[in-house]
Length: 168
Ligand code: CUA
Image (cartoon, rainbow, N blue to C red; front, side):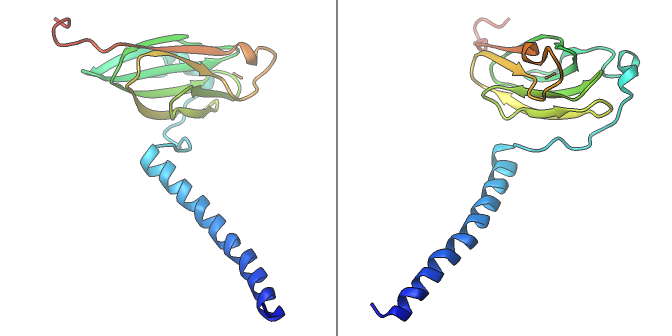
């Protein structure tokens, strides 16, 4: 091959990835945002972290069934645990997690699910997903929050869905 064309080939070999790689990143972001449902926590609300005990919905942390198979889980993150520390739902449930912190920045990540949020004092983090597979899912604090950070673990238990014959 002529030297001139070889140089041209090298140019193209560098230019193509420099265009293709950012496009691949963009496509990955669009797919995760719209198809997989992974999102950064939006500014869904503010709350006084010192007054969580008297501010709805954090004055009553826990799981609430809004409709059959539709739940809302209000969780408070604090040094070094989650309140409540354990949640139990039947498989197939769609759960909206509403989380805030009482003290410092924590994380709220449920393994094997798209739920992955920062929990910032003063802000409300909210995300929804469906749990189809029964099992135990650990909830991790993945923001370093102090000496007990590694102990800050909660649990979500997804029980096998009831069949029509056993439910009522
Ligand atoms: Cu809470 Cu790390």
